[in-house]
Length: 234
Image 1 (tube, one colour):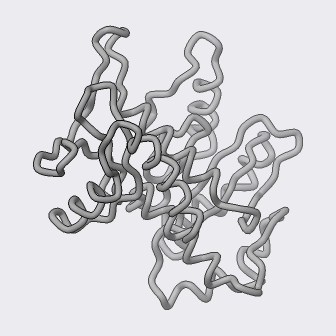
Image 2 (cartoon, rainbow, N blue to C red; image 1 turned 90 degrees about the horizontal axis):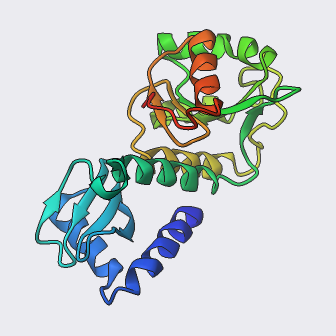
């Protein structure tokens, strides 16, 4: 979990420049709300801080006495949704810290990249996994990560024969697989992944539930369209 802690410390260091102690705020919120806080960051509003938790984004004063949940809009800049932008940034940050141990289904040539959080048992998850070659054939590379799984299912993820029918360019190594799996599950908890399957798009948006290859391609092409570079698919 050292990668998670590193990311949190980097963001906390930024908030510390404002003269408050992000570690104290983190501990206060965790004790009072009983939720794990992964990051603390400044917001454009003086005295209000962004908290990244396993239950989503929250806002707090510097002492942790008052907490808000909802969307922050920047009315001075076309009502830009700052909360959504922070969610996107948080997901991209988390995925950038995965490391080399991952499951990648690479497409050649590659038009898009997706990350799929899933388990191996649910019906929609199995359908999504069976359809991954269709995405690969359409130029979409997919990174496969475990959603929070029961201890009894962890051995399946570390099985060298996992999804042998899929041509993964990278697979989880047998040595140290349980520790790697715990790190990946920690990432899913950081991002608040509760439903399987869930897809994280290149811009950081989250799409929950089963999506057909055609639906995903439509969303991805919409993101990359020059006239509309961001998606509202979340």
